[in-house]
Length: 502
Picture 1 (cartoon, one colour):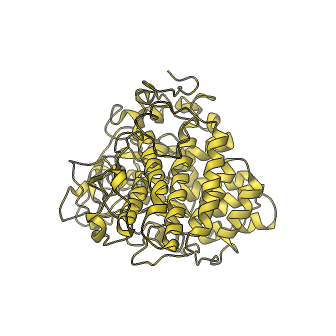
Picture 2 (cartoon, helix red, strand yellow):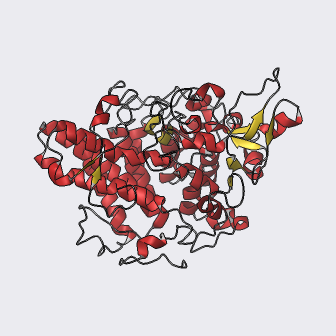
Picture 3 (cartoon, rainbow, N blue to C red):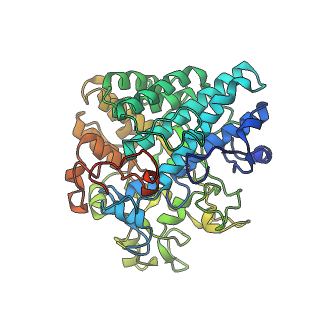
């Protein structure tokens, strides 16, 4: 399960059920059970559902995480790190020179792992000894998660297999790719069916991190927009957003202070719609880092400056040292320098060093700027078991309300009273005045609001702006909008490589 979607075993957690100290999904699935002898009761189904949630941590967990990778391929960040060979996948995506041998296979495997787990659970759900109400909810969660994993896959690789049943040894090598239109149709079908099955809210103590109706609607609206169904996107996103600037029907609202979004303790806040859970209680260590078993936020240590130090009387932030990935570009600095979100987004260590208030060891592609949204402080460092670097506990957002406000404004054609109100609400939260709503204004607002959260590359591709914005990064139109399929997935199978890749 950890290596390929083809495996016919499901890896899940029984013993870990009692260890959900922070939230429902802060569990490390472990132990192997044959699918033929499992899923007999509610406890086993719950453990299996935790396993379906587990690949969500790829957003910011492990070295090959989604945010660091997607940041590197945008115009706003370099790969960074220790050198040009420090993580060949992320380095080559930053210069848009990926090949089927260099692309990290986990971006394919981990998502298909989630698909496989969802498929197994869905195939077994009717025979589980549990209430009908719970069966409906578990089915909704599994379908919504499968939809999310497929959404990431189709955006990354485009030409992918559509697998809706557990594979067996006799079928695993005969899988063929489906048309992207079929993938989007299935994603939308899964989400439409999941939405009424999901609760409007969850218990903060026992259910934080689980999918809600609003989260699934937000994802569906985003999917519709990527699928070119703007009217459908606007309609469903309106249900999520409600009256701009006011609490929506589920109680979600924009945080008053943008900076509060990045306070580590401020998990599952009112602006969060779908959030990846990380914990320092998992005692993650180097022995299993990157295998999917580590529960810390790896992006935190990745974005920190190398060799950071400061004089005793310095007003500079007290930071642990890191690995200097996701380096903000000068272009992003110049675009944001007068924006109220600048300080929360970019840590200007260049200025601090010039003032004698801090020092560091420049890494690869150093600009002197660092991604402050995910920059850990010394107070965030784990002092218990495991490796300190692998046990940061900051959660990360997959979708938050400011994102859906701007998505709806875009779906509305960037025109009209409601689109204006949605744009105004995002700007008003940070003290910016109203400006006329246009697609250009929405594009810029998404860049300022969501910088460093892994959205920019997909935005550029969706808008058709990637070739222009990434011209100085080696981007080739018609090729680099998607990843090459990992070579190992082509060997002995019926899968075909994406166009223009070897």
